[in-house]
Length: 251
Image (cartoon, rainbow, N blue to C red):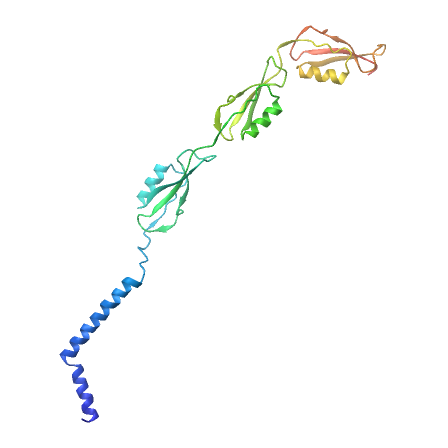
């Protein structure tokens, strides 16, 4: 058989129904095999993102849960921790973050506040104002208003606090102090024979003030000592009264 005859015979064979049917079967088998390989070997990347996580930080947990559900997402409770500002059950953080594109039914984890950390008010009654301030700040609290009232204790002594000692309050709260201005009436101390600077400090501690000060150059006492006082020692005087004294020596 000559080459042209062979070529014509091959073409006729290719065009035959039998060959065509075999070719179709082979193509179908190849396609099925390729699909099986694709399913087994090519990983499924999952559904394309269909939702955007809404911002829920600062909302109550139930409000955040409802807002996520409206976006086709689900809420899950995460960490619960104290917060200096956020009330109990309010959302502090969310994962994934707001604005993240996610698939449907994705779970958003919400960290919530356990409320403000609470501390006990220290006992400051009987302390000086300065010592009470140190104790209050050491308890992570702040000094609030200082109210002065007459009291039986020495001037400047803390009489009480508000809130009272031992009460549990949120960290950073203010504590008000009630401070004594001294008794409304007291007995005049004896200051004769004492130096002027010492007398001044004693009287100020009692809430009394030095009024008229005169000098006695003829006194036998050393210079600078108090020779006499008005009112005399033991007299009843009111708080903030002015005391007159006479000092040895010259001005």
